[in-house]
Length: 150
Image (cartoon, rainbow, N blue to C red):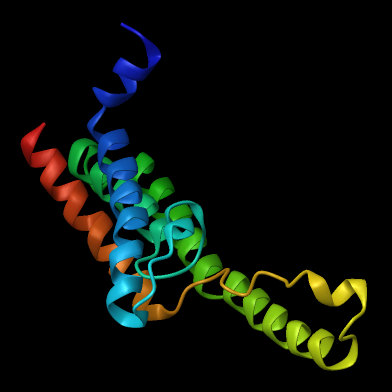
């Protein structure tokens, strides 16, 4: 078998990356419903609803727990790493996005016409708790369905 075939035969991989892929694809229609704006760049960008980071790590950790057991060291490690990613997505990365928003305003007000004002910093880096919850629920649902089907 090829590496790709081996990966897709692994239910934990399918649960994790399936949840991530669905989360990325869902961002486009959700953005359209809420802002009446079709933004295809959301397919490959970070931030937004639902959190693909949360979907990926929650999907992987729950799938590991369902396959290997919830009392195993492997599940404990997966869970701890998932919590680090979720905390980072809601905390550090979100605050970095807030800082980028303030810096963009300052650059816009102070340096209009200056070369620095032509490139805006990316403001949507992290996630709100609601976005993380949405991604986590998606990841958990995907893990449960994949582990019950495969």
